Length: 337
Ligand code: NAD
Ligand code: DAU
Image 1 (spheres, protein in one colour):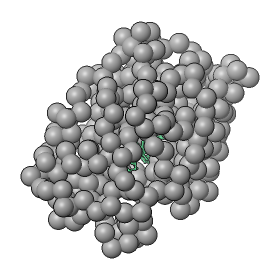
Image 2 (cartoon, protein in one colour; image 1 turned 90 degrees about the vertical axis):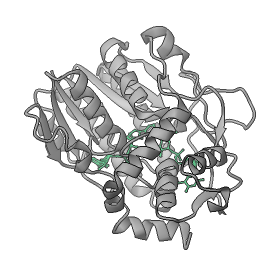
Image 3 (tube, protein in one colour; image 1 turned 180 degrees about the vertical axis):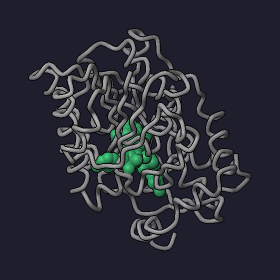
Image 4 (spheres, helix red, strand yellow; image 1 turned 120 degrees about the vertical axis):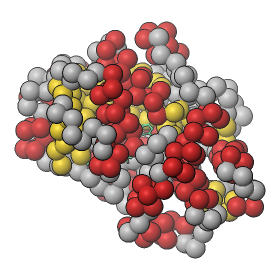
């Protein structure tokens, strides 16, 4: 089977390729990635010489290139996106370009290539924000209510996927997943930013009151959910994927990291809040559990510790990533923190 993975040099895409090649060694993988600031081929050094792995550098907005890359493919797993909410607030245009237009170009090419399955990786952020201290959760029937340029562009891409399924009969599936964490997570996101700042002896910026809640999922659990949807999922369906049983707010996450690393809470610096900051995310993942038998297998506290250890052991990976344009972004976002 030939599987085209878009955005395979990013955080989740690279974890997915490594996972898929471990579990499906006979499949041919094509990784189509533009290599933006977030793409890093170092993540894939373990498979780069595997004859079943091919890398194609290119933009998913480029219709000719995409058509060429999809020739003979059976499955497309679409991760490629601009993924960071704060960057979408500074510069929304690229988010519409890649996330909306890029997805439409891929959908067109998938129709032409007679793809057997187009799987779209989406996010719980399309559902908007839940109130703090409530028991409410997002599920597959939750109305879309995106509130950032990032989530609006992801919502647009989800609607296009469903439209291509209804109108043209493209065999699609979608997963809407919560916040992932684990190896190769780009250090602009809360957990790797906190760990690497602490390793550098810098403070950890916490937005607003820090009482915002995210639903944390270890990245390998997400990869296994995608695998199950590809193998057993029903065409045309959406599956919500999440990790946490109980609410954990950002301040608690950062304090846990500080404790693991033997540091005190005075390394926390409260900074100005993210505009339009969604208060709380929580996912009801009973559909994927009941229909496909999936549930998260990685406990947050244990795998947070292992993630800290991964960053300790892979200093050169994150030091290289935090160089160059990252420093410009950091100054723009955090000033002197
Ligand atoms: P990431 O930012 O780490 O990686 C994105 C990858 O896409 C990079 O390799 C980048 O080079 C590539 N890319 C960007 N624009 C491209 C373009 N125009 N053409 C080709 N390649 C391009 O992102 P991530 O955190 O790995 O997220 C992957 C997907 O999962 C995204 O669609 C995101 O919306 C979704 N998602 C992420 C999370 C999370 O917690 N990180 C949770 C739910 C859903
Ligand atoms: O929910 C899924 C989404 O999770 C994905 O769709 C996105 O691609 C991914 O980036 C992530 O979005 P968030 O905005 O939730 O992740 P981030 O790590 O940027 O922020 C997590 C929380 O931590 C959020 O409430 C904002 C807060 N935060 C973040 C940063 C970077 C801080 O308090 N300080 C920070 O410096």
